[in-house]
Length: 115
Image (spheres, rainbow, N blue to C red):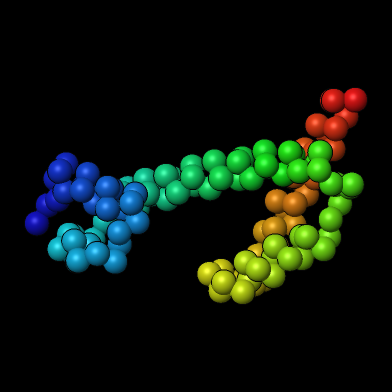
């Protein structure tokens, strides 16, 4: 059974709204490599957009705190996310320092540009 254009479109729509646990998922042929990669690309786009929003908010916090460095807050964030058990703790401990460092770099650069 070939999915055809309509079937692929339906599959992409299901993936994009994150309904993979719905019954409709089981009635469709397994997705092709292309469809899976397309879905991954859309998720990557969302991740980058959310990171950008996070950075913009963090840059604004620079105006309401005494220092850019806040290791206590950084530990709180990683701990809170680790407790959700959605990703491996080791992964979060590697990922978030990268995010924090980029945010601090941009906060510092923004402060210099404003001076």
